[in-house]
Amino acid sequence: MEQIYCLIIIGALIVEYLLSTVSTILNMNSVSEIVPDGFQDHYDEEKYAKSQAYLKDNTRFGLLSSTFSLVLTLIVIHMELFGILDLFVRTQSVHPIVGGLIFFGIIFIINDIINLPFSLYGTFVLEEKYGFNKTTPKTYIIDKLKGYMLTIVFGTMVMSPILYFFNTYGENGWWIAWGLITAFMIAVQPLFVHVIAPMFNKFTPLEDGELRIAIEAFSEKVNFPIAKIDMMDGSKRSSHSNAYFSGFGKSRRIALFDTLLEKHSTEEIVSVVAHEVGHYKKKHIITGTILGIIETGIMLFVFNLLMNDLDLFAVFGVETVSVYGGLIFFGMLYSPVSLLTSIFTTALSRKNEFEADAYSLEHTRNKDALISMLKGLAANNLSHLTPHPLMVFLSYSHPPVMDRIAAVTIIDEQ
Ligand SMILES: [Zn+2]
Image (cartoon, rainbow, N blue to C red; front, side, top):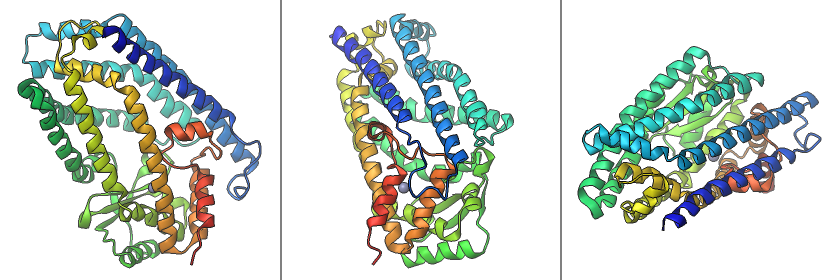
C-alpha cells in the first residue's frame, strides 16, 4: 500500500504542477494584440500595454513560486523531514493534543518564513510597480502580527477539540468533529463581521447623500433589509476595489470599498449592490455553505478510514500513527479529490455570477450602468480580458468579463 500512496501523493503534486504551469503559460499567451471591442473607452494603448505587462509579471512570479514550492515539498518528503519533526514532538512528553498543536505550529511557522520573501515581493515590488500597493511596511507588519494572533486563537480553538475527538472517540470521532466544524463555519460569520474585519479595516457609515438614498431605495424595493451600509478603507492596502455583504438576516451589512466609491457613479454602485443582493436572493450563499459542510463531512469520513494506516505515514518517514500527522498526510493524499471538487465549485461559482448579474439587471433595469461597471472594474484592476479557457476552467471563480458583458447584453430588459 505504501507504494500506491506514494504514487498518488507524488503523482498528484506533479500533475497539479504541470496543469497549473501549462494553463498559466497558455493564459499569458492568449492576450489579444489590440484592445478588444467595446473596451476602447476604458483602455488607451498605454493602459492596455500596462495590463499585459502586469499579466506577464504576475505569470512569471506565479511560475517561480509554484516551482519553488513543488521542489521544496518533494525535498521534505524525500528527506523524511516530517519523521524528524514527529520524533521531536514525541520527545517533548506533553499531552498528545498539545503535541499536535506544536506539530501544526512548527509547520505553520516554517511555511510562513519560507513564503515571506514571496509575499514581500508580491506586495512591495509587483503590486507597487503597477500602482496597486498602498500597504506601508508598518501596516504589513501589524497585519502579520494580527494574523498570527488569529491563527493561534482560532487554530487552538478548532484543532484542540478535533484532535481530542479523534483521540478519544475513535470511530465516532469523525462525525463529532464534523458537528464542531459545522458549528464553527456558522459562528465565524458574525465573528467576522463584529471582530475580525474591524481588526484590519475601519468601517464608517456611508454618509447621507445620493448614493445612500439610492441603495436604501433599492433594498426596500426588493425587500432586502440592510442593517448597515458602511464604507471600508480598502485604500489602506490596495487600490483594487470591491464590495461585499456579510451577516445574516436583519444584521446584514454591506461594505463598500472607498476605492469603489472614488471611481464609480451611483448607478454603477447600485448595480454592484444589486448583484450582491442577487447572490442572497438566488440562495447562492446558503447553497455554498451547505456544499462546504457536506464536503467536509465526506473528507472527515474518509480520513477516519485511513487515519491509522501506517503505510500512509511511512510515505513521509513517520513510524508511529497520530491524529495530527494523519490530518496533514491525508490532506496530501486527498488532493486529487480536492482538485476535482474545486473545479466543480469554481464552475458553480461562475454560473452563480451570471445569475447575480441577471438579477441585478432585472431589478435595476439599467443595462448601461451594469456594463460600464463591469468594464470599469476590469480596467481598474488591469484584469485579463481574454483569459485562456483552460485557466478559466481550472481556477476562475468569476467568468471572464467579456462573457459577463455578452450574457448581460442579450438579456431582454423588459
Ligand atoms: Zn458575484
